[in-house]
Image 1 (cartoon, rainbow, N blue to C red):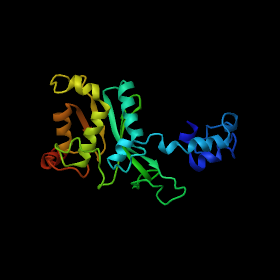
Image 2 (cartoon, rainbow, N blue to C red):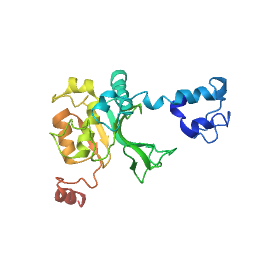
Image 3 (tube, rainbow, N blue to C red):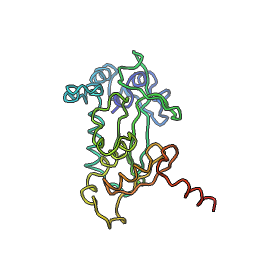
Image 4 (cartoon, helix red, strand yellow):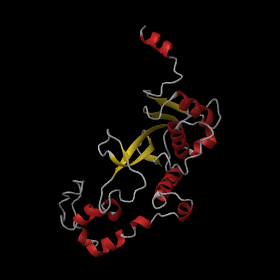
Amino acid sequence: ITCRLYGGEKGESMWEKKGSGEGLGAETIRFDPGKWMNRSRFREIKKYIPIMFASEERKEAEDPWWQVIQVVDDFNNNRKRTIATSNVRDTDETMSPYIPQTTKTGNIPHLSYVFRKPEPLGTEFKNCLDSNSKIMLCLYLCRNKSNEKGDNTYDDNTNMKTARVTLKLMEDSAKDELEEFGNLTNANATRPTYLGDSWFTSVDMCVLAKNIHDFNYIGVVKTNNGKYPMKLLANTMDG
């Protein structure tokens, strides 16, 4: 766990700032790591972190994320297997910040830059969490446009990337409910409801969520406003 959370320069600094927590980005840390693990053993274990979740199957399929994508797959499968969720869920995005060490890009296949984020540069994930427990239910790794291996589940349903990602998040966070509530017309009391910001939301996505998963969706619309009855909305808001 120590290696996973505090790798790189931050991990090494634990032996220099014993007990202070200074520079580790976590004020609550107050311990001397040398009591449990010496520095050389830390370095030895850390060497193997990059290959712990390597997928030979993905490598053979020429997936540039083959060294880490299994982490995402295993995480999603574990959550589906072990977490009982409420009926209200949020879709959103998060950043895993990029901390350069020895190379310009760290051999990461794709870096995203999202200006509005506290850590704008790094690996971007779309995600879904339980609105009540705040537990993360699933992650979706954002790739560049020329590399969407594994992201073809809903290609036949829509050409909108935002809708495909949202539908995939629904699928990965609600496998059991898809079997239980799929195509039921009288399950409004128990049918899951998903919430999303403007990146996820469109009229097409709402229709697909209903037709494919039979789920409810509530979202905020900014640019994806096609097919909205704009005249009706304007007249309604004008009173």
